[in-house]
Length: 176
Image (cartoon, rainbow, N blue to C red):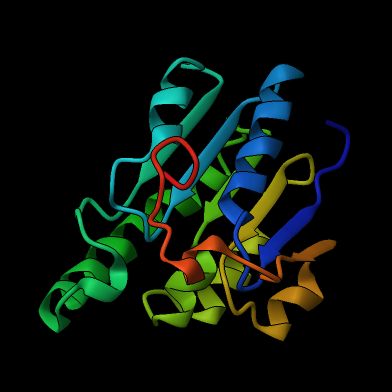
């Protein structure tokens, strides 16, 4: 890749992680090496099984290590998680500058920011470290204007209609 850009997938609609995974799969299909770091997802999701089949080309690291959604964590669990995430953030920063990856996806980094697990300054610093030839993708709701300003492409996923509102539960293979 001659030049990499910064992309943000944000908004309250479904599909931010799915879009990032699709971009990663397209990259693998073109011989690129991809990493996705999932900041708030702790449950086992089907994409983990899919990516295992692409070993060596696409890697997913889940920081959470818990079986609950973030909003279900107790205050004590959130404090522990913040410490764990801060430690992992140092590793993410080192991986970013290692030049081992062509596409670097920070899944739910915006959620980690909103929930004060990382700071705006940390995310801006990480964006500034992006190697020139790397594509960087950030996902999550509520993207601050400071990050939008630094990005090259921003897509806002907007929920227009969703079957959750009719009582449909998350379905294996579709939502997880």
